[in-house]
Amino acid sequence: GGVTFAQPLTVATGADGTRYVLDRHGPTVFMFDGSGNLLGTFGREGEGPGEFASPTDLLLHPDGTLSVLDPGLFRISRFSSGGDFLDMITVETFLSQLEEAGPGTFFAYARFRGTTLRTMMSEMDPGVPQVSVIDSEGTVLRAFARRHERTGEATDIHVNKLFLAPFPGGSLAVSYRGLDRTEIWSPSGVLEKVFHRPPPFGPSPPEYREEDRGPGVQPFTGMAYDIRSSGLAVHPSGEYWAVLVPQTPARFRTPMFGESEIPDEWSIELFDSEGRWLARQPLDFPATNAVLDWYADGLYVLNPYEDAVVYRFGVSVEEGRRGIR
Image 1: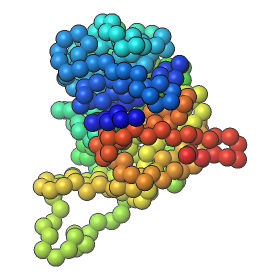
Image 2: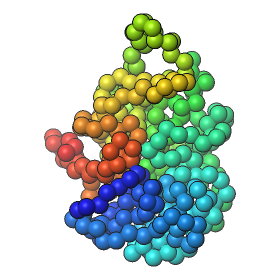
Image 3: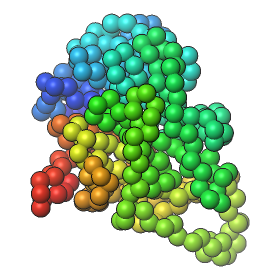
């Protein structure tokens, strides 16, 4: 309908069907009705009330109000369902992703949604928890989800990039980019469950040989890590969850000089609540830095960097007819 996004980072769907899309480079929140018609926008660049510097996440609360996280200003701005500014919370540390943790509390993670950028010293120490619980005053109450190491790759600082998704009952689902592992954490920071995803989710990365790079090409210098997932979303019922994965064994290589080598063929993988694989939907667009959000009206894939598009998929999970469309 004539709306063009620049960098859509997150979407939320209200009980009345209203859809909200946060575009970081507006910086603006777009409001659409259930048919995709633009209802209006709110937010603009600035430092005043209701304004944004570099927003990274949007959270829709059960009461219909919205919170927009803006690490550029170290604050969370709250709005009514119609986009009217209500108030704001100052946060103590750099945070870039929010999920509901309970009345007046948030799960928060210090990494941009949809990118591989990490914050300074956020993952250098394996003993530092990465997910925080903050209260309505912006104070950190507790933290959990420590960095996991892989044998022989203790210096791989990218292995521990996390993807967060709300889980029914106030819990949080956490998936690791470099591991075949999804965890369920309670709001109090207790590890409730661990899923080790089965094939076809976890391909082994290919063996790279320097001679395959061609004659006269300098040997690879930089960092490399396996990609096991790139996004996570949980169905509102908690019975199903989805991840983005490469369609073929993939290793993300970041050279010291030159362009990164990343896979460009991705698929959505669907699992049940016990981690059993159900279905696969190949995507016809690169989704290296895509974001997943799942609401009652569909599974959303936000592709902020490759094509700046928001996709909505329907998911069929009836017995004998499981799939994604």
